[in-house]
Amino acid sequence: MAGQDSAFGGDLDQIARIVSSYVRHHQLGPEQLVELIVTVHRALASLGQATPPMPEPRQPAVSIRQSVRPHYVVCLECGFRAKILRRHLRVQHGLSVDEYRARWNLRSDHPLIAPAYSERRAAMAKEIGLGRRRSIEPPVAPTRRRRPRRTTE
Ligand SMILES: [Zn+2]
Image 1 (cartoon, protein in one colour):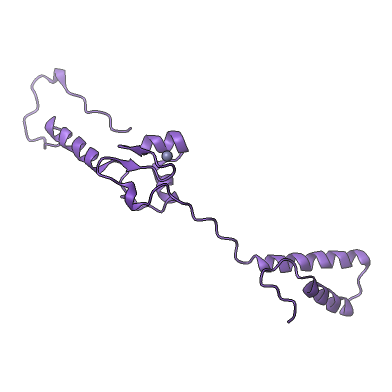
Image 2 (spheres, protein in one colour):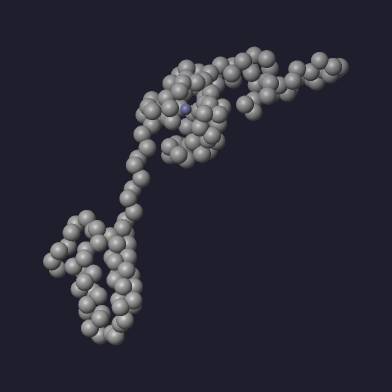
């Protein structure tokens, strides 16, 4: 076949050939002919686009491997460093943690809290007794119960 462009931009030769061979076998009025040309053109164009253009791969602000440091984690969207990214993601990018992980193909255990920080928090929790098992007798008068810090944030 002649006139095959590698990048298909609507090969008029090809359209003319298809249309004329069709017309040879069918009786068409001028309007129908136009319609036929449009249809063929559209069909050929959509063939050329069979593989939709790949979206530009998103470039993270830092590589995913470098986004987790002992004392901070880095936002892949903008390079922001924080001990905890969850809030930043929501406020700055309108992303939930799940959306963020999906966006960057992160594993579900990809840390969004600086490891050293979460360790320190765990240690602190242990210090104030949250990490211990409740083997001790409950206090007699539960008047001054220490409320556990809310960790939803
Ligand atoms: Zn960010």
